[in-house]
Every structure is written in C-alpha cells, then in structure tokens.
Image (cartoon, rainbow, N blue to C red; front, side, top):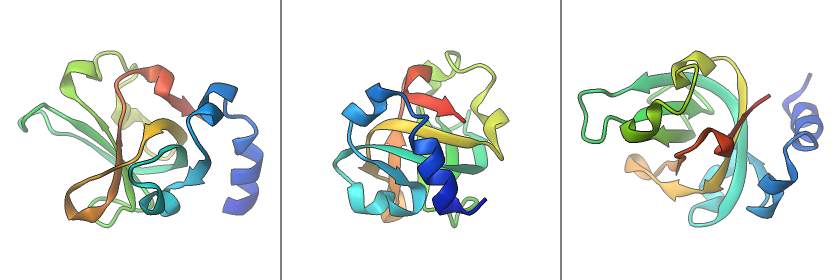
Length: 122
C-alpha cells in the first residue's frame, strides 16, 4: 500500500480527540508544524533509550533511522514506565502521536509525550 493510501486510511482510524489537537500529518511534514499542535504519523524506523543522558530520554525516530530521521518522539525517563511494552518494541510499527511539535537539536521536528494516551499504535 502506498504511503498516501495508508495515510488516508489510517487517518480515519485516529481517535477524534487526536483531531482536536490539530491536523494529522506525516513525519516528513512535521518540520512545517513546529510550534503547532498536530497528530504525527509514521513508521518507527529506530529507537534508543539514553539511560545515561540527562533526563534518561527514550527516542523513537520516524522518517529514517537516527541520525538521518525527519522526526523524533521523546519520552522522558520519569514517564518511561508508563509505556508497556517499552517504546523500543515499536520499531517497524506504524504509530501516531498527538501533541505540540517542537524543535530538537539539529533543527529537526520533535514531540515530547508523557502518557500512552498520546500515542496510538496502528
């Protein structure tokens, strides 16, 4: 299935609450939505738990593997235990996350989520 067909099909499956937070977009387009609320959907291409970094973040990368990804989802260590299975188990899965699109190092788009209700695995 082409990505455009998948996106159209799956955007209909995103809960109505996600639409209240802004448009549903693909990970490749997230850069254009920095500072805005959106639901960002894409395949998790890579993930990393940085347990030795400040805040112990976990990152899930969409739109390519780290470091060539277009978009990252950040989960701070204090919230990691809420996500079961661990976020790294989502590699290869299609996921949508809802919230405010921010800017990460390297000028990439990123979204920090704190609760599994902000993420839908398709």
